[in-house]
Image (cartoon, rainbow, N blue to C red; front, side, top):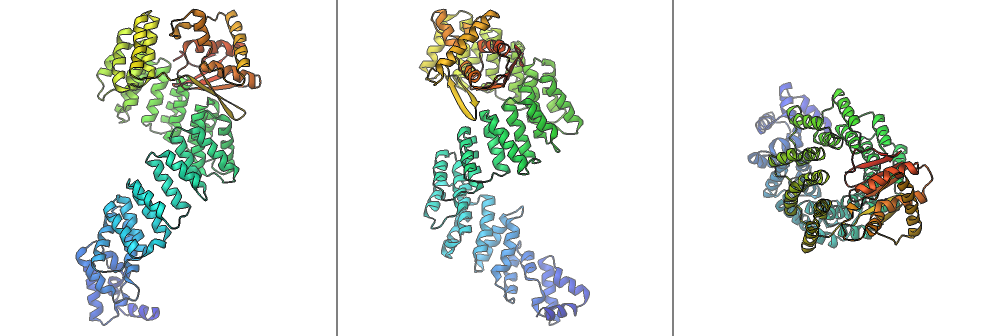
Length: 616
């Protein structure tokens, strides 16, 4: 038959051969059709898939193509499916849906592939109306056995936000594979139902690497990095090999927890597994080392990268900034420009942080004005917050206030909070009160702002106002967040809450602190009890001061880690003035480097000094 068709085609004049096999429009198809009839040549010389494709987008010509295709032996559904697939995967998936509707009007029978391709188009467009029609067609044609289609429908409902329908379908599925479970869990996570997703994950009869990675990622993005790390260790235990996405997710969890030992182990695994050149893995490694206080390791990863993206450069600049190395951050930025890499909005957040923490006001001004003028980047609220922080730290409180009042976008709590922080350091009660009025409206349950204002009043010995703020907190139901610090020793995270005496080594910890206080007092240490806002005797204030969570964590670290090793502590709140002063002295007394990551930045204490110019 092929020989006969080939012979018939070659028997045609050359222009006719081209027309018959390469027509590009319904008009040219009709010309070719007419020519074949006139020359009594078989219609089977026309390519059926081309007949469908040239007529698919013309409703008036689809019925003509349909009639023409009845002369061909293969089922029409097969021919039209090829067309539907192309359209569903194109930039205009709506065309696939329109073609499907026309085919139904012509009573062309659909098969499972037809449903799959049209469902793909519905998913791309989130067309729930047509998607439900396809679901109905699948049920009517008895394709419930087709697990691929069932999973596609499940995913479709999830993407359309119809979680109750998706869950009902999942529960009624007579058969499920690991894809079904993964799809359902993914959409539960996306809808914010972390607990529901975790319960479903716990019930899975089998899990693949995607299942584990998805749940670990959900933990990290839900603020549960510790649970994410625990899942990863369970995954390792049963022998599931992590892929690049898993590595990135676990490194993010390590960054949040400050879990340096695990982060290093995952780094080594990524090298052995061939992920050493994966830019996303390397960028996450930089972030992990930065957030674990290992700036040199982060720099090493950065310098060994064969390919750097704007994310790589921005992560390095931000890391240097939060570690108090502003000049080095600016140098890296200059290198970035020399390499022809254009900065983005994140780059400028890092640069403004660097200028803010090191008091480089003029440089910060230039960067802020230059990001729009030179690079066309429109400042966002984070950039405005950095500039307010820059002015506030430098004591330019009036300029900071004017800057806020002239912002083209509405200032948020972070912006006013930056001004309030400056007011505390530079003791400007009037502006502090104004900032707090705005903060009470923007972020009414944030205890930190009330406490800062109360501290400002206390330092000015306006005790009645300090008490009034505390009462206001109580009346509004605002609870003080307890200080909490964590330290990892031998792969185990130990947490300490301010004032806590329940730890199994509490007696040793307190004894260690008393010894350190004696050494510090010889060197001129005087407890700064102004940070204790309780109307009690000075000795009682000192007792509260000595039980700050980071001090407990430090003593635990000194007791349980080898001499000379670096102690790394994470704190949920800002380090207070007294702890900052004490840690500088202790680093010299015990000849240890102490790295503290607080809510705002890193403090690297070494040889009696801190990497930051100020405690805040």
